[in-house]
Length: 117
Image (cartoon, rainbow, N blue to C red):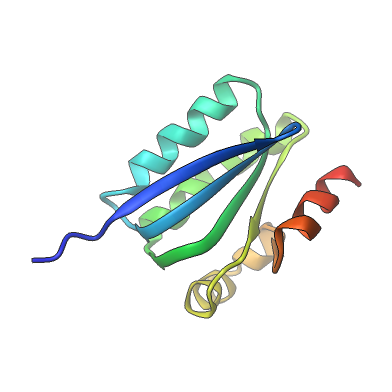
């Protein structure tokens, strides 16, 4: 049985934390992303960009990670924005109405610029 891999890379750009997520975000890997986001929030970093370029799959548990934190992030004058979703991942977000709750962009520069407004 092939194991689905998941990992993240964090890059700080000024006051914005960019998390690149790779692989399969499901019930097994969601706690890893939760921990990473919690560490950032504990450091009072509330401007997050999640880059989906290398995400192959997302489950309801993966989606739940974002819902867990968005209220706290926005209460602290921050936001969580998404960028570079593959079509099949974007379809899941659209079907569930996440595009109403979250800003989704096609390129990183535009996403960063929208934090400065």
